[in-house]
Length: 68
Image 1 (spheres, helix red, strand yellow):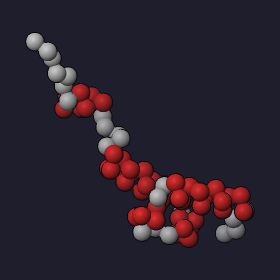
Image 2 (image 1 turned 30 degrees about the vertical axis):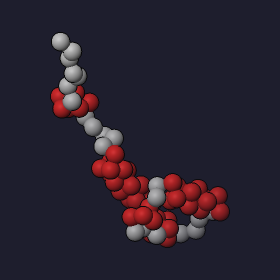
Image 3 (image 1 turned 180 degrees about the vertical axis):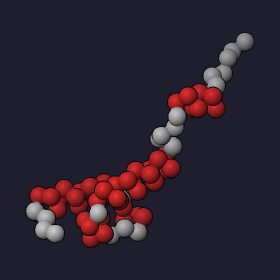
Image 4 (image 1 turned 45 degrees about the horizontal axis):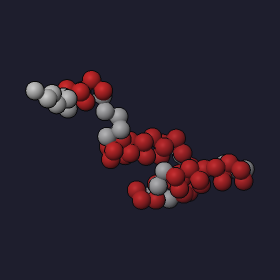
């Protein structure tokens, strides 16, 4: 698989942005299957930040405090 310089730079920048090296993934591994590692990074980000909280459930778990 041959990558153009432009595509290689774009993928390398994405690799750094996703911080995949912190998860033990090397740049050559990412270059072989970027879609797989993007999904894994998204899943790990969601687990770490809780970004994908169901809004309905969020409101049930954290009701607004009512002042009486």
